[in-house]
Amino acid sequence: MPKVKKEKGPSDYGRQGIMFKKDFGQHILKNPLIIQGMVEKSALLPTDTVLEIGPGTGNLTVKLLERVKTVIACEIDVRLVAELKKRVMNTPYQNKLQIRVGDVLKSELPFFNVLVANIPYQISSPLVFKLLLHRPFFRCAVLMFQREFAYRLVAKPGDKLYCRLSINTQLLARVDLIMKVGKNNFRPPPKVESNVVRIEPRNPPPPINFNEWDGLTRIAFSRKNKTLGAIFKQNAVAVTLEKNYRVYCSLKNQKIEDDFDIKQKLDDVLNKNDFCDKRARKMDIDEFIELLLAFHKEGIHFQ
Image (cartoon, rainbow, N blue to C red; front, side, top):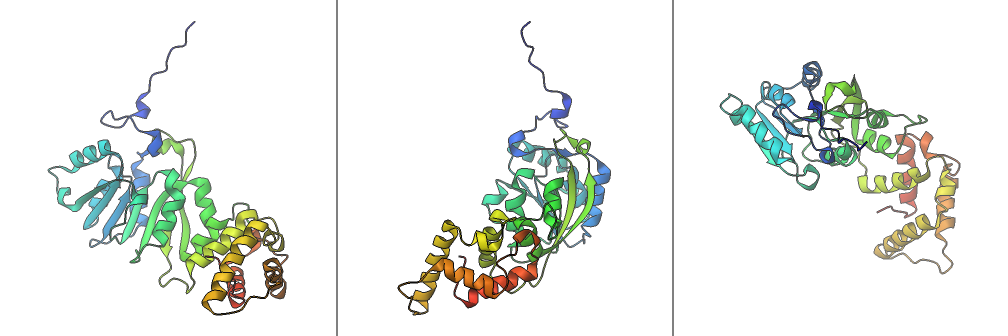
């Protein structure tokens, strides 16, 4: 018998019959208790300007508009923008809502005090770092993430999920898990479970050049189960750091010996500071700061 094409069920559509796009990661949060919980955990003030990314059909947006001065909703799908406008038209909330159309990763973020959003999961990592490097500082962000991603954000040294994302995020912010959210709380249901996370930027931030820090952790976590001694012996790592070292010496008018060996220098720094046998997966923030300063002392830089 010929195959019968399966028709899309009602769970693939929004309230107005709009079919959600998987490419945009559109999974609309439908449970009002979860929405209310996210709003409560945001500790909103009547004077706040709230940023929402991916408002969808506006279930969360309306609850935010009830609490604050302004909501700036960033949406990439023009169909949903039209529906959101219709939802607030001729209501007290119409003048409190600003809508920005486009890709939030490719545009400059507006001023905001708090971010509350059920974001498309595929932009989770770049969005987190865009937020943490955003200035001026915002008070907090309450965000819905895929559960494993949320666990990576809060993982500690030695945990299975501890990674570069964990330590880079925790350097710049305090991160707390707020609530677990099952897949059936969305329309259509995603394939993964979710968690709501609260992120509070450290203000002031630690006095560290983040680009240098990020360069170090990128190398260290490239093989997080290997020793640092083995990682820094890799040719690709040595070539990059030697280039940086030569630029540094040129700027400082320092002479480089003819028999200079970058691998030996890296090994000397690691051994001198007892880092040669350590592994990134078990190192905490203080240890990475100590290692970064040790490299800088010897003219080794990562950007």
